[in-house]
Length: 233
Image (tube, rainbow, N blue to C red):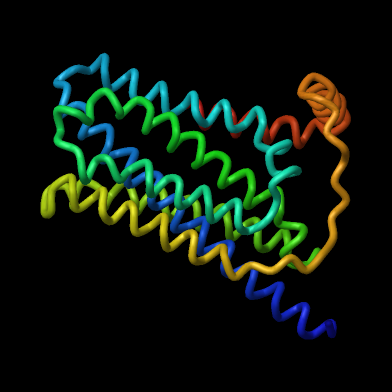
């Protein structure tokens, strides 16, 4: 493959990744607001809403623990598209079951969506070196962050409007469509570059290596701490 052709495909990959992340986060925040409201509407219980949100966060935490080993074994665009389709399938019971049968399923749906949301973000970012040229990675990563933030804002804003105008079913149908679109955006990605992947040595060994590396990079450690505090807030 010529250098010009490879560079063209790298730019195309970068654009697909940016749009896929934006659409994915749009869908994630669309259902965060809609499902939380729906859970309260069904249960009339703040405690149940708290359980629902805790299950969603727990799914994200579980994904963060095994996300990198998972993508070492199941790398590629197919896995990411599968995660999008899994999120779409998780929402299907909300369209076909009567509300009385949905309430007990919602914590499991929340856990699954939280898991798939985090895995998708981890997989997209961790495989960036195989899809995008080295000189484009910093710029692409910046645009990914912007796309994620934009998707989060518009997803949160439009969720309430869709509920008011079309009801919960309209939001869930739109949400399923966003995940299908995200899957369609990642499927054309092509692996262009080889990246060296270290052998998996176990969670404890990798955490030890991470903490050792952060001691030698205080600026990066501070950025991670700020990001964690921001997420907590």
